Image (cartoon, rainbow, N blue to C red; front, side, top):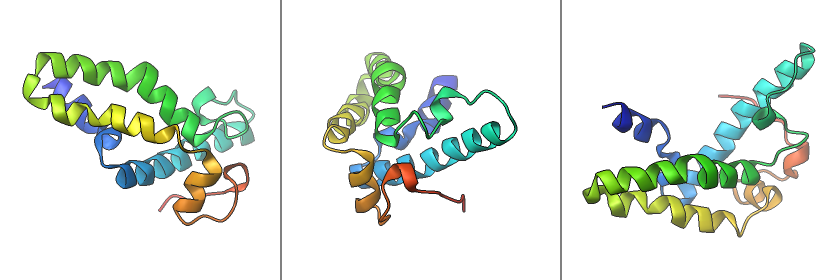
Length: 122
């Protein structure tokens, strides 16, 4: 049951490309807002939340390469009926190779480069 909940919690990387990109922007906004708050409070900024040293596309690639990709590969081994679904993570990973933050934000309707974008959570 815990594995199924983890799959659901991280399923944004299993969604079709457009939906995965929308989620990446929303998650990035949340992460970067946390980092901004940490910085304003004089705290050490969580590395994945630091808009000054991270990119959204880089975060997605790293998350897939080192965290969730291997996890979903293991899930697919345990649950062969899910292999096709779990394979979407690698399709999306390949998609990210064609992006940088500027292209992502532009495609999603933001005119500013990622380093200049300020998001507010809905």
